Structures are given as C-alpha cells and as structure tokens.
Image (cartoon, rainbow, N blue to C red; front, side, top):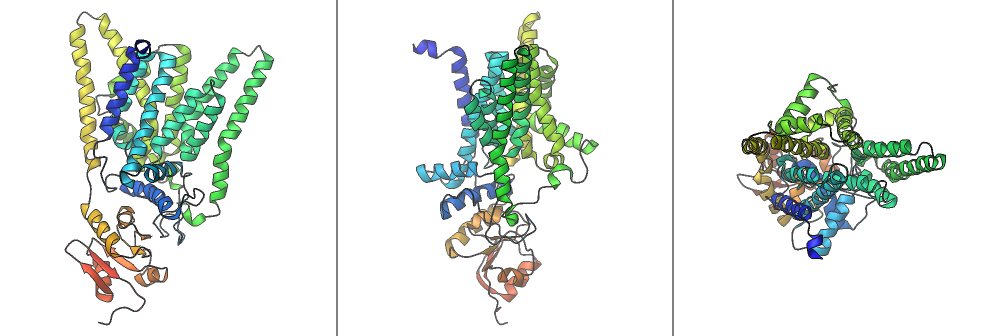
Length: 483
C-alpha cells in the first residue's frame, strides 16, 4: 500500500517541497528592515493591530497616522487596501501557537502560502502536460532566488498566488471550492484577476465549444460561468464599497497605472523585460529555458491554456505599468507563468539532448546554464536580505521600552514606516507639517536616528529624554522648554 502511494513522482515532489521550505528559512528571523521593509511594515502593522485591539477585519489599522498615503489626516490609523486575510492568518498563527515573534510568523505565513502555490502549480501542469514537466516547473518555483526572497516577505502576494492557483486547479472539477478560493484570492489582492481570469475563460470557452451542439449543456455552461463571475467578484465589490467610508485610510493608487506615461515606452521594456525578468529573475542565462518553453509546441489544447497565463501576466505588466516599474515585488505575480515555461523549456532541452550523439556533453551544458542562471540571479538578490539600517531596529527597541504605550511618536525616516514600526507606537514617519502642528494632532514624542537640521531644532526647543551618538528621544509639549 505504501509503495503504491509513494510513487517516484510523489517522492520527487516531496523533496522539492522540502527544498523550497528549507531555502525560505534563510534569515527568517530578520527584523522588518530589509528590502521593501516599508511595505512589509505596513502589512505587519495591521496584523499587530489585531493582537492589540482585537480581530476586527472590517476595521484594519496600522501605525501611520500621517496624511502621506491618502493626503488626508488619519488619526485612527485606518489601513484600507486589500481585505486583511493575510493579517488574520498571520495574527492567528501568532495568537494560537506563539513560540516565535510576530515578525517570524509573518514570514512563515508567506512561506507556507508559497508551498501551497508550488503544490497547485505542479498539479495544474501535471494535469495538462504531464508529471515530469510539472516537477521541473515546481523545481524552478522552489529555487528561483527572486521567488525565494518574496516567498518569505510579509506581503499578501504569496497568499494571493496560492489562492489563485488553487482556484484554477479546482475550476471545472469542484465549482464551490474553486469559487471560495477565487473569492479569497481577489480579497487578498485584486491583482489576482490577472492570474485567474484568462485560464478560467479559456477552459470555459473550450468546454462550450466542445458541447456547442448540445443546447442544454451550453446553456448550463453559460449560466455557470455567469454565476461564477458574479459571485467571485461580489465580495470584493462589497469590500470596496465599505472602504469608501474611510477615505483617510485609502492610499492614493492612481499613479500605479501609468504615472509618467511610461507604458510600452522604451523605459517600460527595459525595466520589466531586461532588468527584472532577464537579470533579476532569470539571471540572464535562464532566458534560454524560457524561450525554449515558449517556442516549443506540445499539445494544442494544453498549449492554449498555458499561454493564457502568459497573456494574463503581460496584461498585468501593461495595465499596472508604473507600479511594476516602481516596485519589483509586483513581479511576484508573474512567477507562476515564468516557471511554467522554464519547466517546459528544460524538459524540451532534455528531450532534444537524448536525440543527440553526445548526451553527457549536452547534460553538462544544460547544468551549466541552470547553475549560472541561479548564481547570477542570486548575485542580484543577495543584497535584499541585508538590514539597511540596523540602528532603526535598536532604537525602536529602546523606544518601546522607555515610552508609555499610549505615546504617539514622530519617527522621521523619509516617509518609510519601517522605523515607526520598530517603535511599536502609532505616529508619523515623516514631518507633514511643523512640529507644533503635529503636537496638536497628538504627537507626544520625537525620535530620530538622523541629526539633521529638523532634529537639531527639536532638541533645542524640547526636553531630551535620551541622546546617544545613534539616536535621540525627545518629549514634546505645547509649552517648549525654557532656554
């Protein structure tokens, strides 16, 4: 019985999952001060608010009280972006299990989500192209340095991808499970539509075409597809309507589409296809596998299905043009499509090598390309794990220790909320007005790791509680100290 269950493919898949898990544990205990720490801090802060104030998913909050995100004062610290499913799971793990700190649980939530993504990706590819290609694609999903890093960051993207791939896998076989996963995917992040919509549409159209002579069946397919589309988007629409009651908590987002009018311009092509996909994700050499996979035909129906993943990814890059140029973590959404064709590419290369007279040389060359691809990508990614400014972490711990829980802190860091997050206090990550204006809005303390002119003026005017060569903590009052 066990021998029948533990087939060769399942053992290999299990090893790939274990490898993926092990790789994602690298620097899992990093404080939130590495690459894109500001976005991770914003996400983690919502989870921490659930621990502090209770699990109220319809009232998500974070530490930033400034008007920077929405251009409106936000005294309650509302944070209305995606529905906080990631945060509920994140805070839930911490509350139920504990053991690790909240930041580690945030990273582990992303890691576990990425393992589900890997599993569903394998199942989808194995179903259409066979288990061998599925294993190759799963391997790339496991080992791409770019994907490893963003599969252990405190961001909703890994969970969104897992829900999306799960919804696609169950689409057509279990309508209800697919619908539930699709709803969760869109609520986790609406960009999930670019992963799910075209593959699902392709499957629906093909099913309709196959049954076009059966009017009863075609009617059933149309009704089913219509209901799915209505029901899968309904919760997201309701959430967006609910959000409008809290405009101060909705960050400005129109710029994500095409600020600077870069869409399809040379800068767009260079940044997304050369800098990001070519260098960062594929390390240059991996482009060979991607091109081989895209160019090789395997089976008409399956090929069309998987090309829909590519088209969806391309639409995402085009529609959210400036967002993709501005933030490399946006490209986490296109990783499944890339891995699909990397797996197909290496499977194609191996099949061709077997036909040649010198298979050993061919395999050595293939291995060289693979190693170089991962090595050069790692060279680009390795700096992402570094803590850019350890002083903000040390200072944050000190602030958390000496200031009262009800304190509201000005922690200027160029608008980056990573420093404010470390203080474990609500406040302002940037000076959005004069110091007196912020005191009137409720600021009680000023903390800085940068002794610039603004900080020097605050030190001169208000009472210094602590000062070292690295930081200063100042008590703020409407009545400055007497000079």
